[in-house]
Length: 417
Image (cartoon, rainbow, N blue to C red; front, side, top):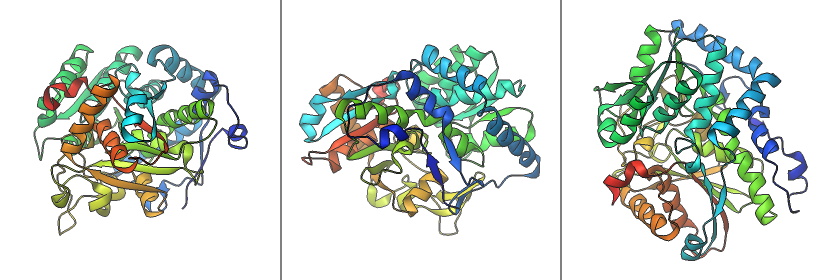
């Protein structure tokens, strides 16, 4: 069934060429007010919930509770206030003048790296943990790849007074050691996953296994993947990114961008930006997937090289072998090192509303170093894939572009100098 998203910006969309005064309250409140119509757990043919019976009832309970509580003014008011006072929203929309001159297009950066904890992940972590606390849950569990979701979860749990367990692949723990130490400092129990490739996929598998054995816990999925209602919930809490960016670009430029770009692993930061522009056909939407070391022997870019299967509770694209079994992905960016993908991104790909490109490790490293030198902004290696794609697509195009800078790159300095 086709998805339609009603964005609470009718007054702006109907008059989008005029100057707009930025209204912090309106921009923040758009996320809790966002509605999805005709929702049945699927984005077109993608999505759904393919889970053991022991989890089916839990997920239905979660879906019902989410639908009800997000209609209440009390929940929306509390969530909005935390975003303002604790997270520091709205994040800025920054005109990167030096990068713009270098590329030959006007480039704005949506600065999610300036959020508390340094990435977009805190938007979803605060929302879901606030939800869980009101459900009476006593323990939070989560998976993490680059460590940003783990840090955001540990931070939100400390803030809201709940214990948490963070599952992380042993390989990712080594390459993101700083974030591991941050999680532990915040009071989280970090559990190493030593099966499979020891990366994000394996962390998700282990966390899901723990959840099946302990369904009274709350599983806080960090990306827009997994069984219904997680894609809907994560998209809801991350929609603040695009709704802010839309209002900000109208204020600064008096028009919508020609293109928007975000990196795509599981897909949460990208859908956060994309959602506010889906109905604007004149705005081109681009996603940058991790291409690994060599595009010709790609082992990371799911939408470009995968096929639809049931994987980790949902039906979407996934990297597979010849027998349609999921295979391990390989990317320099731990947050993009995932063989699956959001069912909404799968839908956007198949309907041609968004176009997805592979970006190699070396291209991302070059973009990481370039943005640091030109703008004094060090992006996460995940976000660097989006910058690299802009370098490729927008060179001397004189376009107006928004790039979602989903996280900061402190965690990647030692590996990408």
